[in-house]
Length: 220
Image 1: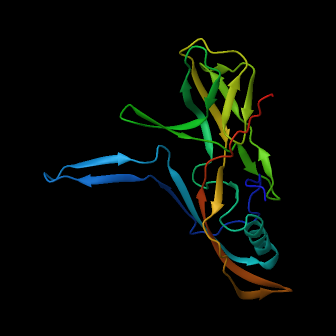
Image 2 (image 1 turned 135 degrees about the vertical axis):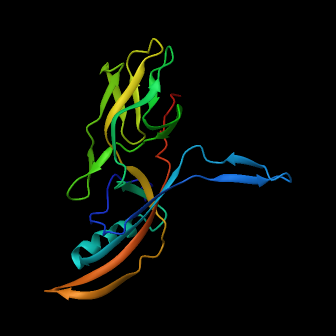
Image 3 (image 1 turned 180 degrees about the vertical axis):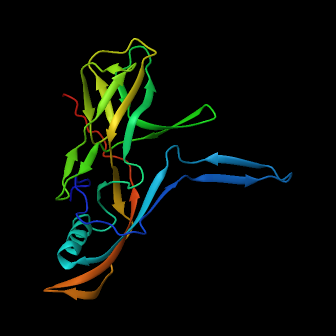
């Protein structure tokens, strides 16, 4: 089985959809009522709860097909966060001298403090659940970027010419997340009928995973 597939569930979620960003923090209480806090994850993990309500059997089969293909929680696929799937002129790096490779990210600024959430999957869903390359624009100091290559699976950009240092890089475009099912079971109910088709209800829980590793080979 391929560990990652560039595809989406071909069915529309119902209202009641839930998206949850999560960090993991270890807290040790002290005798003076102070506490020591240690962040164990440098990046958030996102989880999603998606219900597919009153969908025809033909659409339910797309949900079931993805669950079977990914063997439940084993394999990864693509998913779009309904509440955060676009970057608009997002600053993602200040270049160091000689640097060519950068990670795309979204910046959260509070009281002058920056936090970058890494973005990896530069795709959007097509009408048949296929992954379409999203239209990504990269700028350097507000102007057009020089020659570069995007890694759409990992959200990196590599420039042909090294940076002088101090350049501000920004990007715009749509993105998705690599996710896996958080359910090995996929319960579904038949609650109605329309014409020759059953009307089905089901739901899935999804959780983000790290992008596929970049495999490089060395000459012998």
